[in-house]
Image (cartoon, rainbow, N blue to C red; front, top):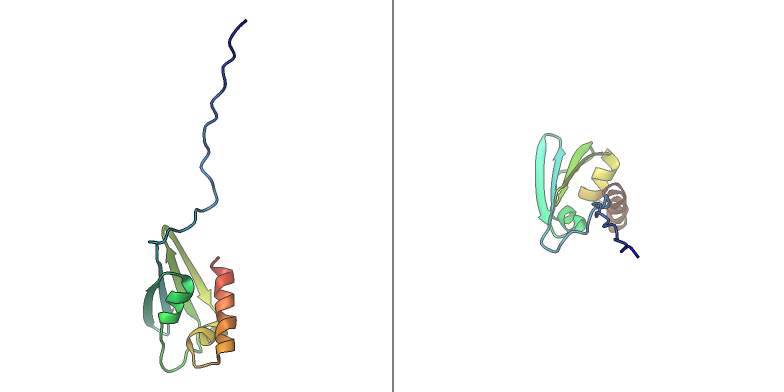
Length: 105
């Protein structure tokens, strides 16, 4: 009787991004009204909280997030920029943060 050989299956790289290791940090760049703000943190939320803008922020802004190998750029509406970085209540900040977490999963 002939011996059957098993076919070796080649591993296919996953298209799903792997989880970030503990050493990876999040780098955020915010461009608003001609000014550039940069912050770095362990998570997206930590990095966002480190950006302090004085004098109000009712304007469009461009938010760049770099996590490991991924770089994403989004334009934030004026109301979200104000909720995150302006002088508003904690509830408004939580709502703005929820919006950011949705567009930067």
